[in-house]
Image (tube, rainbow, N blue to C red; front, side):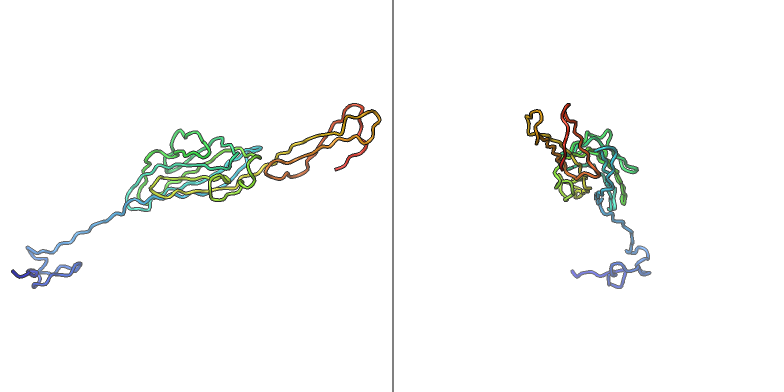
Length: 239
């Protein structure tokens, strides 16, 4: 039994992709064409940027971040977005807000805890092929003068600065952003004397010591005021 050729094309099979000949196209013919669309699967990613640090009152601040979830694939997908703050030790997180114009915010938001992972989008939020969802995260916090000065600046790791990470799980690598934390001075005043004294004594003295135990220098002028006991007057003062 010998191998057969193409009975509709002079015994020679047409090359793939070539146009049908008249004989190919004649009834009963054997030539057919069809268009097939191949969709790539969903390809999700997440990015995060630090936007700003704003002081709202004495020692009170707000850090703002933008989280973006994108789907560069050819099919719709879904995600569950989480957020993990990793602020420097001593910082007190007071609360937060999350807003999105095209995503889906988890409501109500969980209580904010430094170092814990919190869900900020609805579970399995759908995203179209080629779609992008943006979330603005605002964290209110109280700065602390007890935070180690070396931890105020960002280092790319949790526990330094106003570090914050976002994740959509195993579908894509996590993304993080950070802003430097503000430092605060913290002054203490100590007073000592070389007493007890006696009336008419010379050389009696008080020593006042001001110490900054905070993590930032003071600005401007710091005044120290001292009220002497009744019957005691200062002869001179030295710095």
